[in-house]
Length: 504
Image (cartoon, rainbow, N blue to C red; front, side, top):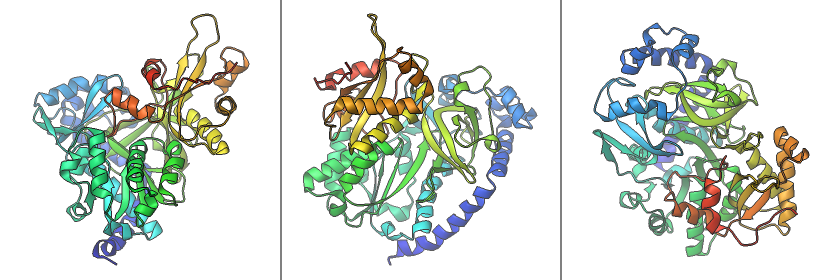
């Protein structure tokens, strides 16, 4: 056994005990974090404006601090960019994480000296929990790749600024630097396809043991490797044993990734965002991701249907229920207060608190009152695909509102790895599955308000070409599963095969 894997064993055991302990104290830890956050920020500009000195309870906080999105936080961020101190949190942020929003354009999310450990330690803890549970520490001795954004940082208002994955790259522990690929120069390449070619060149003959990234971009990496080597990834890298992924629901990509690898491999799912590292997979056996209840973040949970209400219900951890869909709202030691992340989650367990990410608050279809969410379309598609042994490369769904008296419908843009022999029958299966998932959609179909869904098959690599055409290829960018308008649908038109599939 080599030194890194040898030393990892006792440390993994120690972290495992700490996290198991925090599972039992989650509600108390959340209360302590709430108290500390409010007390620490009471002398900031935001804290004074919102009467933090008088906040003693969560009820006080709800009265004095409304839920905000980025647009409503922007004036405070602008003050920080002007060089002012003690605006949202004590002092100034040590970084801005730069991220693109669908409605806000570029967002600058503060990361502080107090909040950076949440991003770094959570990723470490996920790996150590895996080591402790499985006993697999050998991967620590091999080469690891983190498919990430460029680590090059610019300065905005004197504050180092870049993609979260690039910022985190600067905090990879020294003892792992020798194991990390690609090299710094390759990581700095902005153009994704050029970067991917260099990554393949650097890694194809290495002893790769861990590969990490967003599933669609890992798939591109695997495809390039297979193209160049003529081998399955599991044969090319015989010691490859751990895949770490996050950013999107893994399920739609799972079959194709596994097929590319060619053998069973352990997988660790993460739930990071620029605003915080919210949850991670702590067990290969249990369903869901362990909520990060002791890492500088105070969580609130709003019933998903209320998130855009003027005074929505705001629950704390002790009040949540299994199976309910909640919008995630956070306050943290980076200075975000009652901040609407834009994600919806549901609990699969409250002992311990484990969650699934179910979609985006703004990514849904309710053009006809059906309020279909990401979790429902993914489940409907994957059930049909699994039954037919169909592999899906990528997909998105948009409403088609009839302008000439015909019935409206949902249009599904799907890129197939292997297309079904009968696309009409496949579409009907998806439609039936969605009807069982969403009672409102079922009512609209049964009531003849909507006609059954239609599929627009997308060309091979069509979604990659689409993402390239809108300047969002690679990095942390993702195709939205659902839109409530036709913007993405219209942009996809050049990438659609001629033989659209529709119901008669």
